[in-house]
Length: 231
Image (cartoon, rainbow, N blue to C red; front, side, top):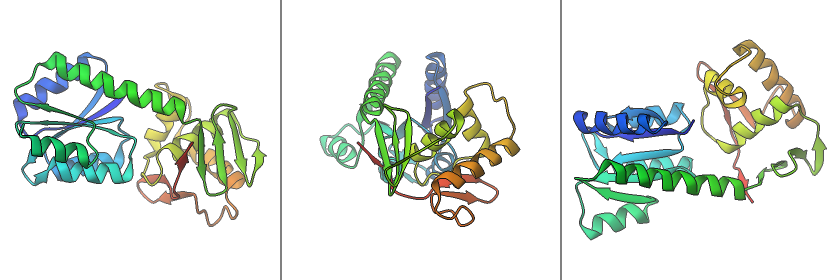
């Protein structure tokens, strides 16, 4: 399911947009401040964010730059009453993908959300090779390489590695990883996940006891700690 981060400090408007998005089948997490939005972003994988510009403790422009720095593939739609050309240009120049001004029609916003998510899907389909230093995933052939040599991995190990590399530098919670690699129905527990991560480290790390790629964030989860290039 596509997860959307909605950042809007107007309670009534935020609830209305959240209801409409959920009605379209999206999973929505709503925040009303920069601090709350950053916290949600740090612990959840989002496909798209809808950002209000004026927030109690900052602005949507700074949030956009923060998000794009860590996940350039994430789509951003600005939602604001500021419709002056300079504001529109600024929002797009810093990485925003679309801009809609208040008041707006909900159906128009839903349409723009669908457009951005379709674009993401096309980009993901086009990016069939992920490379991180000496580790490579060829999604076309469903193969993993280390130092140009094929690494034999199970189906779940492949999904696990793909999840990490698609979310480089992002801390992924254990339950979030489980949902990513097994779907909505989780059929094994966190201890089993730890075993899979240990096995994957054995295959891709030069020194599994001192991992450089898959890093444990104690009390939080795991993160891929290297740059990833898409081809």
